[in-house]
Length: 365
Image (cartoon, rainbow, N blue to C red; front, side, top):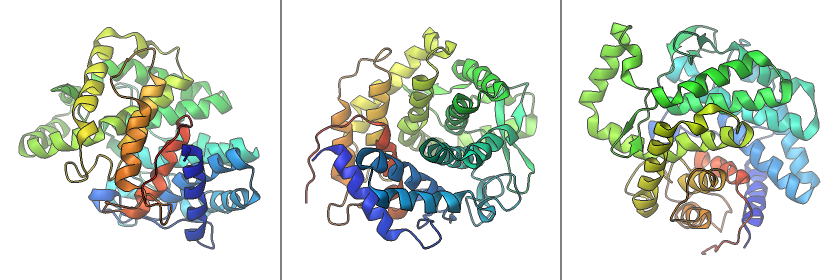
């Protein structure tokens, strides 16, 4: 069965669980167990529905898309006009889930704009890109709560990359140079803020950035010492998740200087070598983040397809996609809900396959 056909089957299965208000069932942020509003998963499903409509032109996908887009653009999702309320319990920067919670919404809003040409979606995406506080000294973004409170530095490198990629995507449609300038400044910083260790990239920004901010520096170092092994496993499960948005950025901004920084490229290739030698063999029991929460197989396929000018791998995109499907796709429901603690979130994240070229897959019943 072709991947595009599996995606369309998943989109149809998604419509069957779509709520009357256009939203989709929320999850709980995988192994983090933060109770979520429907915003995140609805944003993800919009990408899957849009791709299914591109493939088939079927009006049923358009109808579901319009309902989901109207829900996402409603005042209820962004009640205070600043950031979208992703978590119900106020976790992660007041419930916004930092930068990535907003980046995922921007991704969906852009998909709605490209599909239907309605300016309200593009305007909302542009507002989110501009409103996020920017630290000019460090050249990174800060977190913003739904109430509009500056919550300080967003220390997760992967979240910085996600927001950078989607900000550049907003610039592609708006031409807003303020947004693009921030993306360029941050991308220039990636080689110096990326924290590599033992052949893979760590989740967090490099600690030296915060030496001038003693309280924050102390908190990071204390956590690193206490949670060394846990952080190592977590970082391994987040490698592909960190590089997936980097592949988005590479595809739409190939002129950025970061793609020519030799020291960064050496470490980047080492990380992908680690993935091909180790993570390709992980089972559902080996890491709570790889495959079972992040769709690592889809992410690696996209990375390998995007960086052919930089990296020559020993595995193929099809191998990674097949592994993701074998471990987690349920052909009886057409949803990616097997072997995961958060089936609704993993099902919604099938959307990450929408950026992969079509290929022939085996579906095992």
